[in-house]
Structure formats: structure tokens, C-alpha cells
Length: 321
Length: 319
Image: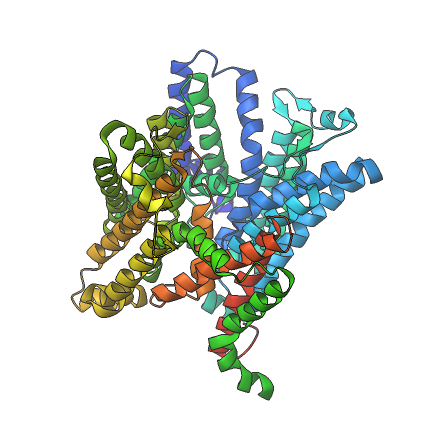
């Protein structure tokens, strides 16, 4: 997708921008909100935007991998809630670090279940993960007993309070994973083959790519990232609500599609997703700073999403003509 | 392998029903009130709202598309029918609700059918948009019908005929009409052909874009009818009353065996799927399980039902 090696660094930056219309849109959004609200363009607020966007962002990085494979994972919100609950629920008995590890492991396990079911049964991932979205939420309710779990030792909530300038630890982890998985996509065999599978699964299979293994790996990665988001959320809130992350899978899909990654697979990148996540976060933050009521937010999101699709369609049509 | 070969066809055809029958018997043994007429009618009344929506969405699913906006639409329309009832009276409220349901269906159908946008994203956007519209309309507060005892509007949710609750009659009536439309009319055949092979049906002279538009209109209309029942049953509406319905509806449709790829499926399958979910939910509650156990069971049942169906079609358990 991005052949930066053949171009100079300046022209490769331009090329990336040309392929990622979302960054122009993001720039426009930032300009408009900076003009409309004096509080928007401050270091403090921009840092906040990044931190707030990081949770959906981590879910989106994982789901982008799955989507490039031509699959979808609707269960990320429920996996996040499970990790959140485990990180807080287990730390009294075993300490914070093992609890965090187990929480992340639970994400890997659920991701593996999803991936294995998709690979073994041949059921479309939409159905598999729709089932998981309902079922894993049930597991969360069983574990928490419908109660919000509270952290006993409040020093746990300080773990995430590490700042590098305006950048919070949460944001750094999100940006780190974005860069890591972009590298994975563009520089490793797994990444190249992920595109091949999403583009044409049959020819990928006939070319000797181990389609099923790649899919399982990507579902596991997606689960792990959702669990990481869950752990970070538990640090930020100090509580684990059984309903945490509900319908976040929908926001995640919105962010990814805004970025320009296609649901049909074989096309997309982490840069696009990063752009989509930031745009979503900037719009939500900006609208809130302008004191717009909650319903305007929801309506703007819906409209922007449809416009993004229409734009994407027209641009794609122009290219083929 | 030979046991599998012999068992697969009956298992595919009747496995789900057999498993369901076993569930009914076992539950009835432990919870004597489960299989009484009163409880059965209660369950069907409870599923009638989800079922009504599911019947509409089945049309969309058979064309090979999705409608995730029905949950939000149910919320908006229930708020609308309740509020309009207070303002303009029942008859106008019902007419407005049906019209708005159809209108949202037209918008969805235009975006998906004519502009050829991805149905998942379009209806997702609509989900968000309709949530916003609901809050805009209601101002965030709950609405209630001011004279629940006097109004004739109560018959839809609270009335009964020959001892059977009205929602059940409406559910069955809509199911029969929908089934007739789907199986006995040209329009029904077009729905199947668009889902089966869109390009081929376009070249055979089917106006595929209009068929898709109409499918979404049916979905919107069915949701409007469900909202009328809901409003009449509850005599009020919160701003979250329909949240999550889109998922339950899809779960029921999938459980019934309608393929998400389009081109196959029937109304009675959807009715059976939704009703089974209702009985499982009710049975687990009567057995004393907490309500969230049904979510786990739904997960397992969906995967198993679809897997068995696929396995029998391809003649092997694993893909």
C-alpha cells in the first residue's frame, strides 16, 4: 500500500496524505473548532482529546486488522468490559500486575474463540461475533454479579497518570500500538498476506497462504487490544461497570469507516484508522466545548458517516473511470 | 463418517426443533408453570414486538442486506406515538407513526438501494441519527399517556380477543400477510432474486433498486406497528426503550435459519426463531437463573444452529 522506500521522505508524506482524505477533514475540523472555541486549541485540551480517543482507538486498531482480512469483530466492547472487570476484580487476591496480565489474557482467549470459530465452522464473523457480543456480556454479568466493581487500593488509578508533556500513558500506548501494527501491516509477511486474504480469499488460499491461521492471529490481536483498552479504562475510572463499552463496537466501526478502510477487506491502513479515530475524538470534544446538546452529537456523527461513504464512493468511481 | 452422513440431513432439518423440544420438556419438569396456556400466551405476547420487527427485517435480510437501525427507530416511534397521542389523539398519532416509519425506510432504502452504500454502515449511521432525533424530539424526558384508562389506543397492547392478547393476534396477522407477500406475489419473488443474484435479476428486468427500497420500507413499517403495540402496552416511553432490539431481532432471524447472505429464508422461520428465543428466555427465568444467563445460551444456540446448518450443506463439520 505505502511504498515509502521508493520515494523521498517529503513526497512519501504527500502520497500518504493523498491516499488519506481523512487527514484533510481532520485539519478542517481542527480549524473550525479552533475558530469557534478559544478552549479548543490548547495543549491541555488536545492532550485530553487524544486520551479520550485512545480507548476507541485501541479497539479500532485491532478491528482494522480484522477488517483488512475481510472480517468484522462486533464483540470488542464486551471483551473490553470483561478485561476491565477482571483487572479490578482479581487484584485484591493476586496483586495488580498479575490481574492485568490475566485480564489481557482473557482478551486473547475470547479473540481466539472468535477466530477459531470463524476458521473452523466457516460461519461469517458477523454472526460469530454478534453471538459473542451477546454472550461475553453475559459472562461479564456473571463475573461481576451485576455490580460495579470498585478498586480497593486507589494507587492503582495512578498507574495511568504518567505524562510526557500533554501525552498521557493511555495515548502513548494507543499511538505506540498504531505505529507497531502499521509496521506489521506494511513490513511483515503477516501484514502482506492479511491484505491478500481480504482482497481475494480464494486466490490467497491457492497461492499457499495459510488463510485460517492468519485470521485466528488477527482475531487474537484484536481481542488483546480490546483487553488493553479495558485495563486502561479500569485505571482511568477506578471502577468496572458491567455495562462498560456497550455499543463501543459501533463507534469503532464508525471511526474506521471514516478513516477510509473498507469493510469488504483488502484495503486500509492504521494511518487511515488513526485519522478516523482522531477526527471522531476532535468532533466529539469540539461539539462539547461549544456546549451543543448530546443529540446534536449523535446526529452529526450519523450524517458525517453517510457523507464519508458517499464521498468515498464518488472518489472510487472517479478513479475507475 | 457414515453415521454423520446418515444423520446430517435429519439433523439439519429437525435438529434445532428436537433440541428445542427437549428444552421445553426438561424445563416443564422443573418449572410446572412453564407449559401452561397462560404462560405460553405470555411468552408469545412478549415476543410479539421483537417478532413484528423481525418479520420486517427478514425482508431486508433476504435481499442480502442488513438493518441495524430498527432498535433506534422503535425508540423514536414509541416516543412519537405516545407524545402525539397526547397532542392529537390516537388516530392521528398512529397515522403519523406509520408514516414516519415508512419515511425512515425510504431514506435507508434510498441510501442502500440507489446510492449503493454499505448497508451495515448506513443503518449504523441511522441508528445514531435516530437516537439524536429521539432526544431532540423528547428533550430527554420520558413521555407518558395522560389518560391510559379511557383511550381506545389501549387495545393494541392491553386488549384481548377470545382470550388471546391483542399483540399476539397482530403478530400472527402480520406474519401471515408477510408470508403471503413473500411466497405468493411477484414482489416476494423479486426479493428472493435480488438476494440470490442481484446482477442476474437486474438483467432479467427486476428493478432491484426499488425492490431494496421497498424492503427497507417494510422494515420501517413493521417497526412502526411494533412501536404502536409497545406504546399502547407501556402507555409511556423512555428514550432508551428500544435499545439493543436490533441485536435480538438479528439473533432470532439467524436462529430461524435465514442466511445473512440473502436469497433464502422465510417468515415462519423468523417467527420460530424469535419465539424459541422467547421461550428459552422465559424458561431460564422460571428455572431461577438470573436473566443474563440467557445471553450465554443465546451465544451457544446461535453458533450451534448456524454451524449445524452449514455443516450439513457442505457435508463436513469443518470448513
